[in-house]
Length: 224
Image (cartoon, rainbow, N blue to C red; front, side, top):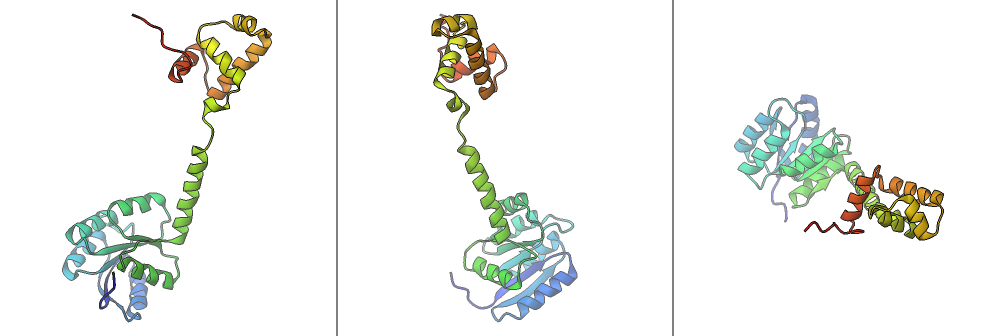
């Protein structure tokens, strides 16, 4: 998508001095112009309907109608209008909510001026923009989830002997009977039992039997 003519921008922020600073920044750009300003969510929806901007710079946390609901209404009334959240909150929940209501980007207020201008142009070309710090947080979170997912399942941590003892215990054998069957001491079987129950986070015989059935280590008794 190519940008034709000047990008018409609506500024929505409840801080007058901040809006003035952004207006000065945008006015200095030959391909952009500020067509309206709003100090709350309700005003943003009204000004967007009146001026039909190409891009809305939307603050989070304004009084009155929430910025997320304002964005939802603006996008519903005119889907081609782009919305770029410009906020001080590096909060993943806000980011997710913003994307859910149709925002095209999320940039932090402490970003350099040229980064904001680049983000605005990227969004107008049909792309999405995410502030580098937020992107870094998401990547770190993703890596953390990958590591958690790659941890071995609890059953996989059991030794072959522990699995054998698990099966025999679940089948109703006593520690003494298992020791006799495996030709091991009672103390050794007790140690295996303690280790497997610790690894599986199991605290009694009923849980152990239930776990063995779930893992198909033993079959449910035929009650017919």
